[in-house]
Image: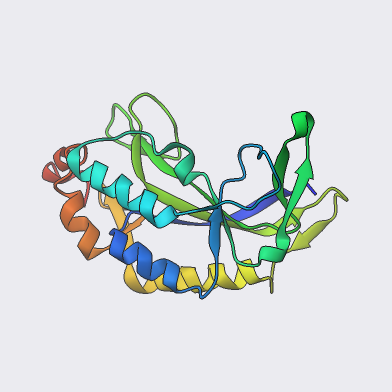
Length: 207
């Protein structure tokens, strides 16, 4: 079943890797998979998202803004029963889901000439601002019938994650206005020193 998704709720985070570990520990079970490319066989390959996120943060501190690529385009699965495989051309297989998993994507922004910031925009001057977790309240399957995700394991997990975020993080601000990206006291200390963002903190654009 190919799922058409809508009405996403989002959590955008740029926190310390130790805090990301705490965030993920809120959910007792769960794993990450890459569903973007075909597989040679119907075998579930789990990804170490925390390792990739840690590498991303360490690169950010050094001024390396390499695109995290597919390491951030993952699916966070709580109920393994929703994972299915479908055969495609050339003897390969693709991964799909009976119900929506939690989606991950880059959090990006560009700085406009008037110093305003636009979120989730890709351009030559884009700034990577961590990771965004998404989950739909409503989705549409191949039967074209809208269905609610309320009560599913991923729904309950997303609610727990959202609660942790509200208790442990706060919005990054641009010109005193909150961005969608949430940070922590711990991550803000090293964010202020990162080569790409330091000038914006020093000038008061970011806070």
